[in-house]
Image (cartoon, rainbow, N blue to C red; front, side):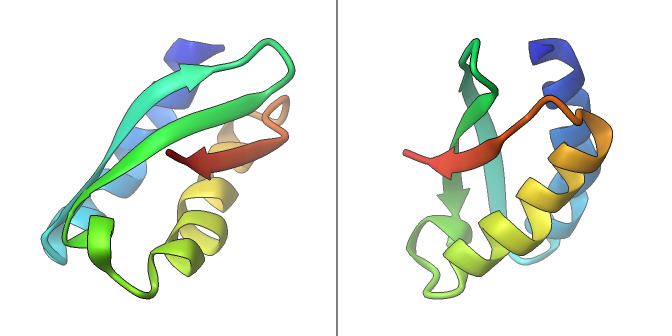
Length: 73
């Protein structure tokens, strides 16, 4: 599952990088929680939670239905 999540994250990276940010996969737990670190401009952006939930989490869940949640560390 971790490889599939990583592939899904690759699909959102270009949009994040266009705004000076990035996302790094830290872990995927057995119960379907994806842990990521938002980097660059995304790390301190006030809209990062919306980006995380409405952008990153939506794409990851679409690609890997077993994922329950994406959380930023």
